[in-house]
Image (cartoon, rainbow, N blue to C red; front, side, top):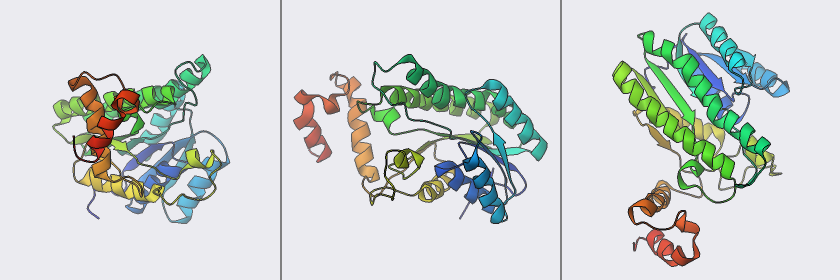
Length: 281
């Protein structure tokens, strides 16, 4: 596989939400490419086991218990990274589901935004300035969501957090073009249906046929980074890229066509959306 220039032996990959799922799969791939891996996640057995599993594969892995919502803990993560060497890859991957609609309680909203959005803000503000000034190749990846683009009704807090994360990462990309002329790149990872801890916590014990594995997402991410893609839009075993593009195109069309917000789910537009997805629109 051809790698992004930031993936260099001996340089450091910092991964939040690294104890499981996409974060751990990315750590395995980056570690196998010779990078030192710094895993950040909430303290506990999962984080310890993740570091041990990487070490058993011969990967130089360090675990740092970190709550991404807490600025001081993220600053401690930065100090730990600096002690290991130059940071080449920063994967802001820590996230959580919200668990409620628009009128969910304040606690749900705050913990969702604090993790999914503020965790990424802390990550970027603390790590990226030194990546800019280091005069070395770098890559910053934020794990977004298709829900942050199409905004399906239901988990409103999660949708809002991921929509804001999309805007944050797009703004970062623009900043990096001006500051580094592309030497440090930004990427928005947009997974499809992936079998992770989110799925298991809903009581699904085995990977559904339609889901990708975290390893498939990590491989797709690395290929997208190497190709210079900003939007790394992953398919899965149920939804291909063409379907995603049609759905997203309809969503953006709400503004252009002055349709009701989230018209994809509006009863008056159900037939038009069906025709659109069939290629008749």
